Length: 320
Image 1 (cartoon, rainbow, N blue to C red):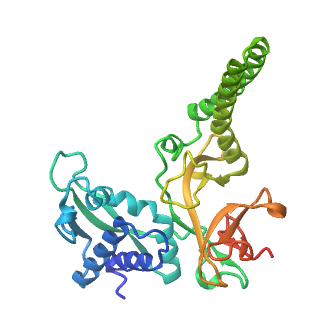
Image 2 (tube, helix red, strand yellow):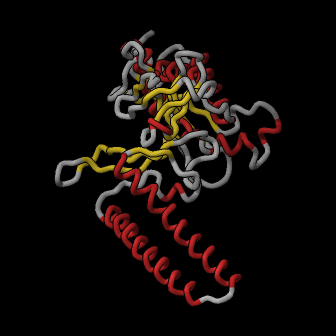
Image 3 (cartoon, one colour):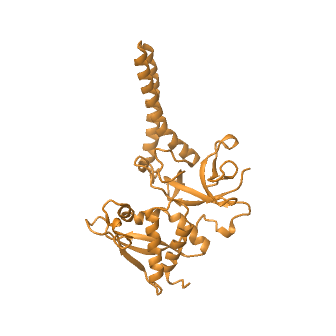
């Protein structure tokens, strides 16, 4: 393939990503597939970009309905592709392609009417990715399937960089929650000890448990993620579309004055393919002798097809 035709190379990477994607086949994935096919069918000579608008890839009149699945998916199609950037980079490494596709919205925030987009080619980032032909014998390779869109509460954490005042706010919030929790427990115990009615005692006890559990549910995931770097994403933060998402405290490209890299919280989804039965592998908390670890469990046989999970190398091996 002509390496000068960057857009075609990027579209080829995008199409191969669609073929390899084993997540939920959403409307957005269907639209992306049509976009990459359109580029590959249209552009033989070199082009810098491919332009389209939000009306171009409708399948039928139903897609024209305001608020429908097509309109919702197309409205954020550029963000959907960005969420799969890590997967695209992995595909580019496997196929030895130099570019991946990126979609830009060129009339964002400019009122009503069709949204206008363009697809461009950007240089692939191969850092930290093991090529499929370099995976050690007996190991599996994990893929960052997507940087998932979390719940409304999760959006407060997702992408949060812990530097400067943000780091101090997180630490202050955790300390304040511990203080409040202590006051609630001690004060609640004192109040309950003075209650004579069984019904009032039960109401007070349930209220005390609810407040304590609520504070614990907010503090513990953040603390665990900071200390362990990656955990299973709590259900209150996890996207409904992902069967098992992870909350990762990952490094950024910026550094502190000390020279250490800043970190941020990201909701992501790691997956792999089971080498035994070719089923999907998702990440879960280990149990029994694997307690305290994250492991990859095969969707078809989660008791026997169990694999280790190293998020730094994105490799794993059978643990039984």
